[in-house]
Figure 1: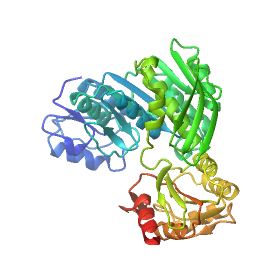
Figure 2 (figure 1 turned 180 degrees about the vertical axis):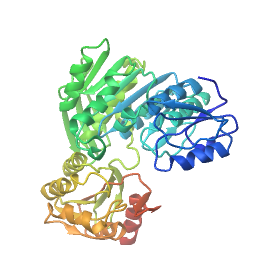
Figure 3 (figure 1 turned 135 degrees about the horizontal axis):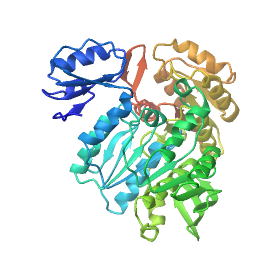
Figure 4 (figure 1 turned 90 degrees about the vertical axis):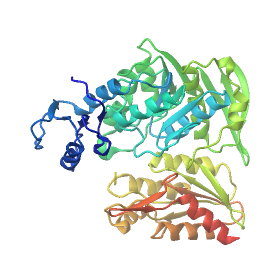
Length: 464
């Protein structure tokens, strides 16, 4: 292919002489016109495109434009941090990559993560639109991080990102698998298809070490797959061979964990709550080792004591005047909701409250499932709105309430949060679930500022 000054899939980034990659979209024609107006010399388009392209523009047709976009991205933006890892799974990706970065910073290494929270590093931070950015943006970000001296990079590998070739041609030191539970079935249709997308990270990419949760049923399948390949395997969990959890003891100040750690019996403590965070920490430790850090160089007790949860992941907001504790969490799937409720249940002898909703224009099948989980596991349930998008919010709540007869339905998330916090008594815990770090709410086609943390903090202050 002829070399052009730059290649981009964002029409606003086009400068005269560039190659514009026209990704399929409902408004692809508008983006193409904009790119040509800005001086694109060539366009890469799907082979079956019916878009009208003026003469004088080089037209390159692609049978797989997502894959070709990744190939071009690797060619135009080859620079990247020296050590790269990726983690996939339904839950835990954001916390895991955050912990990887924190561990490396403890070791005084320059590290960054790219994922749901965008770019997080000691040199450069930026919000992102996708858990795994599209190939061109991902490579551009990797090149910029490299130019800034970043040595280590941890990536969140979503099933969409893997399926759509966004990570293609990236070489990894280590890849990790956390778990798999129902999510994104509006896209993948079946759990088998969902798992197959995740499994591609372990079968179709170049890497040296696989770090796998041995306690997850799908993790066991990944172990079986990788064991047939010339790769190093680090397994963790209660069934882990490399790092084995012997016991976890929760307390009001965190957790104590007894481990068989690379053959040694050790006991560590963390201020983080939730058994799932222990798994995320162990995954992060395995990935750091997979990126070339020696086991003996890891201050394991310091790591467990100093790691902190990223925004919106079992994040403590504060305590009300009445003595109730408030947490926010990104739990938006049945399994993640069940996990966070069960985890925080161990931290209180009083009542466990949960507030949640479900997003519109997404997998509707999970709504009654999440309602049933809340009804079964929580003492006080408030069903409210998440991001209703173009659906009627009351209909979404109705579908949840059908399986949650002991819940209270409150429309309007802000009002629901205030009422939930007003209802807390001494020793109670409230989980505000579903949106976590998000600072917006989508109603219809309008995206407005909305933060669970801000709403909860304001409500707590107003009770004092």
